[in-house]
Image (cartoon, rainbow, N blue to C red; front, side, top):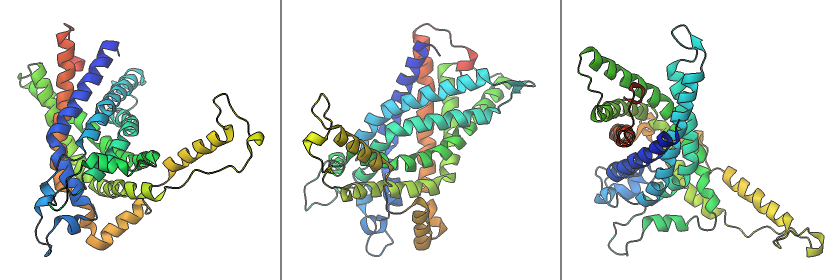
Length: 353
């Protein structure tokens, strides 16, 4: 890919992420609260047959951390996705009239690797976001707090713990993208072919964005409903990360050696101490964010709420993803085509939806 196209991908991806966060974020907050283990205690009335107004208050809590993280993470995702897809499509051995690697496998591989890169950037913000969404600012007997800052303070003594949710986030996003992107690409090609056969294809930027939005929304909503059980477990793991970080507070280890026995580097720091600190940091990341494993959490949910508990929030997640994915990828494709055309570059057929 050319440098100009690479820049377009970053700009379009960042703008798409910002658009979705600004418009769809409240639905994500409601979904998080609904999937929380404290849902009944915090958001339903005493009789358990009604939802409190606090369920719908502070729905933008935590949005700041997500916007800051999704701008680089979305750019990294699309750059990786487009790069790997381009490489596999152009270097895969020919098999008959097509490639040896099936197209859905190429799209699934590209989106999967891109998701792993994106999750590494997004994980700390996702942990802060979901815990901030649960901060109760609805009570009038105490002052309101900044939910994002209040949550971040819980990780102040152990910021490395913010990355413990990486496995949980990747475990949710990998099967989701592996399902979504092959369906998205297939639906997109079907709509394009249908319009070409009917002679209604215009090859305009607006048509590109519309086709992409519809395809992404349909593919995303199906993938979202199917992967809801993984999302429910992931939400509970993320919410447990803050408590897990607080429990890990402990004084730094002491090597027990005298200064004369230790090799001191040019900065005056003990090499042994630096090695131990590095080892502690690695162990911190490897620690699970929850005392329970994913399987134990799933079994607990089934025990308390039945199998339907694993699909709590599935409908709202499907709607949220349909709107979010449609806006996200539609804005991305439209933005990418607009930036290219603004420079006077000819947009070829391969770049259109």
